[in-house]
Length: 345
Ligand code: SF4
Image (cartoon, rainbow, N blue to C red; front, side):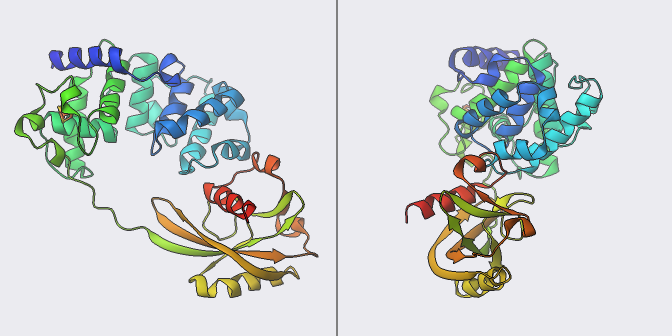
């Protein structure tokens, strides 16, 4: 075990990527990076991390910000409950004096802070001997110890957490945890792990048995369901009409084109006509259909040009929005895709 720790830390010191959250011990900044990195790749996170810290450099500034402002900055990253929870949790931390809890159980009582996030913040920011297990660590440890089983079963997870707990050293626990994650992200990748470059090649039981690519077994994912949405593009010079989330495939409270769910492309015009006629408007020609895929579902937007000269946006909680204003409103990546496509027509 001591040898594994030594080899891994030495490898980390030489090969780790230069990432901004590795240059700080500020629990807020580490917490933010961990929340952002859940379900999102490093290269996507980097510009968001920079933007966030420029606007909210401290936990206090973040906790005191309006949720709308926070969501606007997060727009495009998806999994919006992550940041809703962190914002709520930061408010609670501020009420309790502004310090991220140093006790594991206290940290885990915060909204959205599970065993992984608590372990990451406590080990990296405070140097506590706490393990972490994310998808990368799970894969590395499953291979290292040749553990078989369904990765999401609680029995398997328990075994992995126990291994992680036993391995994490007293000295440099935060670096050790990050080293395991880094190894999983850059060397011990799901398909074709680069065992020839791995510091643990000699210790790895799966490698010795030649079954590293079979461990852990791939997840059986269900194909995402399909949602069809009819959307109205209503424009005036330099602005587009947006309404706050109605029913059309975006998170609650987000801004979108006036939209209506429909059964398929065939029913899209009718669905939109019902909506737009309520404002005395008319649906014109169909512009395009566009697909947006999330892990949960595939959304097909059928976008029509529409006119609504008598429409008063405020009456239905809508507004005319310019590209500059859009930056300050929560919106999903699908809206940017639609507007970019619309601009090219
Ligand atoms: S030897 Fe190969 S399978 Fe084992 S931990 Fe290293 S990269 Fe992963």
